[in-house]
Structure formats: structure tokens, C-alpha cells
Image (cartoon, rainbow, N blue to C red; front, side, top):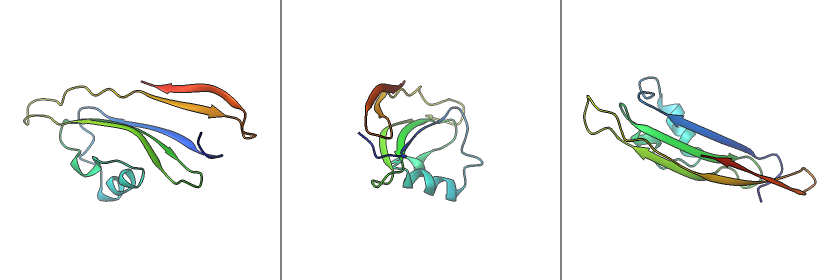
Length: 100
């Protein structure tokens, strides 16, 4: 179970999202737990789900990356699946939130 006031963050890039991705944005992705923020490149595919907040800081739950093989092709699709148990502020269990 995650800490009170945690936030689930789901992020992805498809085709081209790196031209405007500055070093400060890559650093933020790394602070959220990304292992691939520095490697994101032209026409690559990338997805990540993380939990931010609480006393534990940021916790990456899943991340996938696929690079393009050359300048004229795209990376292969990526797929991640994450189940996050939910709870009320009082700690009572709720359903599970799934990202696919």
C-alpha cells in the first residue's frame, strides 16, 4: 500500500517527443525513477508509471522503452501493465487501479 497523498503518474512518448525534451525534463523523469530518461531519442517509444509522494518519495512501478533502428523507422510498440492497490485516507482498502 502506498503512503497517504501519493499520486500515480502515467507517462508515454510515441513517435517523436524528444526535440523539445530539455535536460531539466529528463532530470525530472530520472527523479521519478526512470532508467531510460537519458536514452529517449528520435522516434522512440517509451512508457512509465510511477507513484509520487508520501514519505517514500517517487517509486517507479514499470517502465519500457523501444528505440528506432534508424532515422526512417519507428521503435516497436511498448506495453506495460501495472496494478495499484487503492485505499481511502483512513487506510481502508478499495479497488485496484490498473494501467495497461
